[in-house]
View (cartoon, rainbow, N blue to C red):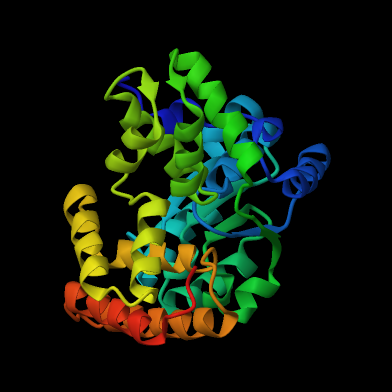
Length: 319
């Protein structure tokens, strides 16, 4: 249990990567030809972007991969000096041990400042013979067009439930854990396609015992049960504001949820409500307004209670 499972069970080869079949097939073609353009990996967190970059480099360079691979996180070092110094110094030196080029993996590249992106654009252009870049980002639109046009773009999708289950069950067998059916469903709900989050929550839940059930997952992940969120919303839509407010208090106390956590879960569950479509539209619009106010620094309890009051005012059709 001392090891971090995300690293312990990280796929070592491209074939071990789950849920990204199309991406893996394209990357394998680069390994076969021992050549590749600059790459951009775009997609949600926990879908295999960093793992794919590592696996690609390992398969391409073999035992010499560490000598020719440099990883930077742009969210930590996002200014122009990083591009001018660290990145440029590594990019302009010759590759080691008869490899055709080096690889710089720039994680969270969408965090780079505009000046840093402009400098990176020139560096990518100038040192193509000795270095290739792999840029990882959640939102490719935050990168300037000249950088995007220099890269082959790979879109990573959120993992489906079957892929996540297969991966988590492999960990459970290896760690001799028992995962109940409702526990697995809870892991899938909390993770929302993020395999890294699912693995971390599973490890934290396992610290409570060798049996992982829904109760352990929801409490260790500070996530409210979806049925409890749904019950609070239905109660509000029926016009029972005080009761809905009491259910909100239980969520805040039992699970320690923040305002943003509750808003995100309310948004996820609103589509499952058995109400008219026009009511869902109004509620979603109000959820968006509430979330904006929370980001601007408003009191979370006041805003969520205002959301419940709004749901009371538009309710009457819940069943």
